[in-house]
Length: 247
Image 1: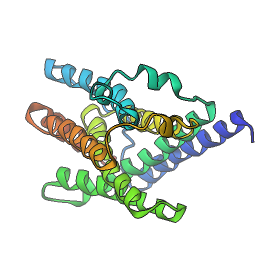
Image 2: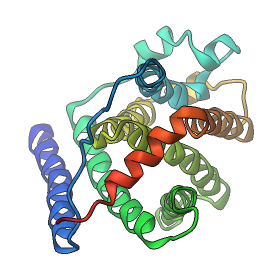
Image 3: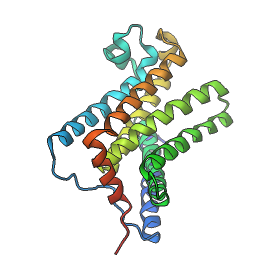
Image 4: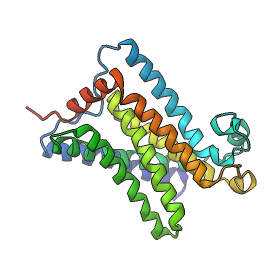
């Protein structure tokens, strides 16, 4: 297949996952609610929304380009040169969006089942279990020849990313924002790893442990910020709306 055919094929798989999810929810007697209403737009909610949009644009760059950082300023920003070296192909968009659609559809359905299953502290349990499950699935990369340490680093990183993505959906009620965040992270990953010699030519000063630790700290701080104060009440209300049964 050429690039366009490959992209269409991958996108079709992604949208098929959304269709299957909606059919599954219907059979379970749940209401398909990927786009919850925003609410009263209070100042703290607007601020939260602005922070989320910034994070969605900033974190995918940070997540990938931290590997090539030569100074601390290039760890958290100043990525102009590294970005200019990345190779972009249409097929990367297909791969990334397909993965985002499929995995976020799975996460949505899994979160709904978890929220419905627990009687005490359902929100905390659903977030932790769904994030841990998503992360542990990355150990399947061992079957692709990855060494255990590299796979373990990816699992830890995926757990932090999952916390952030779940937070974005539960706070905004917009599944498409969770899909967009996942897609941007994967797109940057494809562009980085499929750009010839970029990592070997511009290896950064941080080692693998330091990189994964920084990513975890950033994602956990983001998660904690939205799980405290009035923002937590927004998340709890959206979680309640998410598991609404059909009349």
